[in-house]
Amino acid sequence: WLTLKVPAFVCEGDELYVSCAGYPGYSARDAVLYKDNKVIGSSPSNADFLVGRANMTTSGLYRCTRQ
Image (cartoon, rainbow, N blue to C red; front, side, top):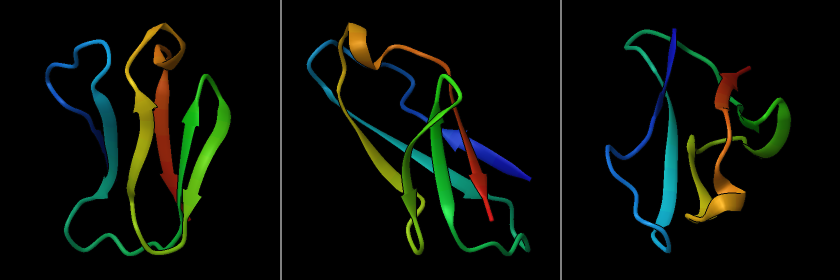
């Protein structure tokens, strides 16, 4: 099981960080972040991603996987 953690509130211009977190006992290595079904980031050791500054171009549907 995974959860994509995002801030409750984001204002335009804020740096947007998201985290792909597994539940306790879930073992997986590589985290992959998708926006609108396209890979926008991956990390072999860290599940925290900087998406960028919040604006209209950062709007979209985000999801994550762990492999």
